[in-house]
Image 1 (cartoon, rainbow, N blue to C red):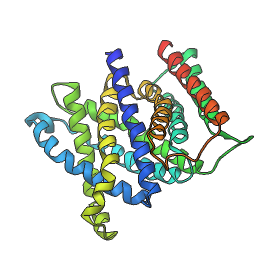
Image 2 (image 1 turned 135 degrees about the vertical axis):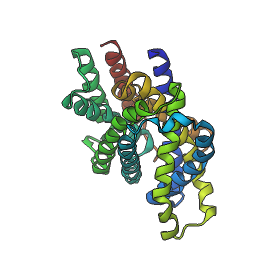
Image 3 (image 1 turned 180 degrees about the vertical axis):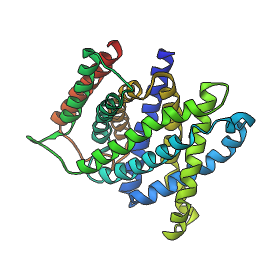
Length: 295
């Protein structure tokens, strides 16, 4: 189960890294954060409706324990996306995805504070190393670049609320298998968010043609959610976030691959020292994952 959870988490990290890059391209082409969030969530909600109908079963309503976590997940997911998009205006995707590795630190502190988790020294070392790697990733030209960091910490807080709620939501859903529960959870949460954001589509006078540019991000984000929910159900949100720290190196690799293929507007040109520092930060993040895993 642990090995499957790790593989599932790495798959989620890959889709999330792809989503970061898709959102960066969208923003560089003149899009805005709120518009992308509304359009993407509406697309995901539309995609969730037939899946929800297929996955539905009579016993689904047998327990109401998932309703409060659903509200927490909806608030955390939506708030986190808004903060993330605002941060992306001033922070490149490869660096931003690694900065979100601090998510595991915030989640670990909150989980320990409310009695959900206890950590040994190796696991504490992994959490500290994850935070240090994010600081190395954020170091630029002899100083730390704090532009956009307020939005990063805002995103971390909202995502922490979402992560803790997801586990309780999946556990409260009545379904025969873990993946069935995860699929129901993903579809339900996106359906609810879609309904909440639907008025914004009309208030902002959006047009159906605007949905197409947001489709790549929406697709990547939906599959990221599905695999992430499955990962949390198998190994828990804290260990799941340690695994998800791989989004940093994955974003760097995807960015380099796309730049090699001729895709532009992903990153401002960087010198070799910047990529070396990012490589060191990536190795530190891998070390953090290993420390926590063997703790």
